[in-house]
Length: 248
Ligand code: BTN
Image 1 (cartoon, rainbow, N blue to C red):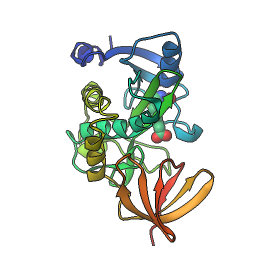
Image 2: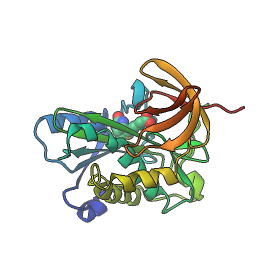
Image 3: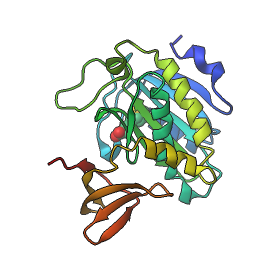
Image 4: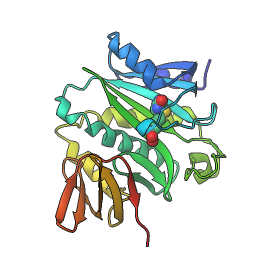
């Protein structure tokens, strides 16, 4: 019996919950199940991840009992060219859910979720041949972070512990709404991200296809690309490894 059992029957169709005490990574588990033909909508949550992964191969810190680590299996009907939009969709779903507990949640393009400039949630979207695994890690009741990590948690920001299952249910509900907006309706996702965009108006440095770019972020384009004002004009950045705000 886990804290999560009570929300299983409240998830919107076709989402359903699996809970495990300990796995290597929820995203690896879901990928294997997807390759074996599992239907879309699986929400795989684990109390402990032994090798939770972040983007660019980083380790993901998620202390058991405090944080929320889960992965969702989707099989989008839209063409593959739209699947990258799930990163933005997931970021918005998380931000909207956290706002039920705390104000002023920001999205750092493409999909980090921050409060007061500190990371509260991370998203890892990985595509297979005919599926996408959306891995989400949220610092819910984490009180202490490793030295040097600019991170915060819902409990620190709200000043009280928050039920992780409530957060999970909220995110899945919002994901159900926004993941149906990959093509028509994507403008509503973009609008939601623009309202919370951490980078807009800031000078940033980023790496894109192994090249460093510097410029001022003017906002987001209609396809979710970052509009970067550089010396030669406005560039549309579709993907970037690391985005850093330059503070003077
Ligand atoms: C990042 O910000 O670098 C992305 C972090 C993603 C972490 C989640 S936790 C659940 C899922 N399983 C993993 O191994 N990683 C993702």
